Image (cartoon, rainbow, N blue to C red; front, side, top):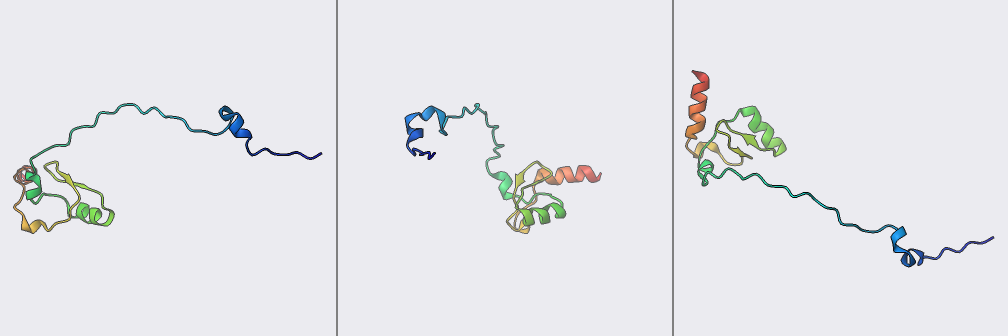
Length: 94
């Protein structure tokens, strides 16, 4: 007995074959990004040297003592020290 396969069969009954559907995605509310007016980008921040080295190797961001999150790319010696980082560091050492 020979059986023929009709390639057009899925077109005759589209509800039984593979298809596409719309996935509902719940609405999410994005948390606002801390906006410091760009001032934090004008300072050198306090972060451990180990974290800086890890960030340069992996590309992951670091968190400064003041809370700024960024991926270090610039030479910090060209910028003044962040006053918040300096204050927090001094309080930790006291």
